[in-house]
Image (cartoon, rainbow, N blue to C red; front, side, top):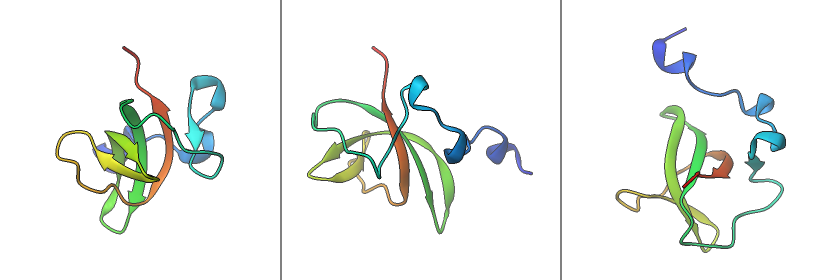
Length: 77
């Protein structure tokens, strides 16, 4: 296991009690809200900050499309 994988949450173990929401349940409506996003695509997996606009998750820094989003939660403060 690489160091990067050690810090990646297992999507199956993310709990709604901790604020995580599967993209299969619903998407956030407030496009101004900053989210913490868990993703997995062909290039790898990770956690990043982003926003959801018109049903698409975009990176908060450069507005690039985030592919393979599995779960999201609102960032605190």
